[in-house]
Image (cartoon, rainbow, N blue to C red; front, side, top):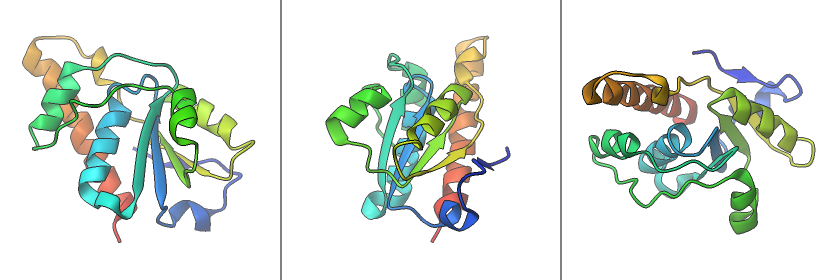
Length: 157
């Protein structure tokens, strides 16, 4: 996967370790909550982590299963839109990491009125995989493991 940083952002800012990170995907039900759970687990309170979607999705039981396999609990996650997040918590983020094209376009719109960096991490949508339960769960595991690798590499001290 290739990391893309919008050309209007300077390279020095985009690689600094941020204090607050927002993970965004299309529905805030698969990729962004997985990324947020992993980042919270890996970095605790040293980085504030949020997640949101372009639209509101429904909780996905495969996400819960894939995250539980590595000893984390995501059962209390409730999908929320970017607007709901802004209403409840504000948009005090240094960095938005987008995991889908629609989220990336929406995040770039935020840069018009907010001082934040945006990074695009193209991430496959495991909900598109068909097959039996194990084949579907394998797709979620792959996304989980790829996100963990990217998060470790991007935010290591």
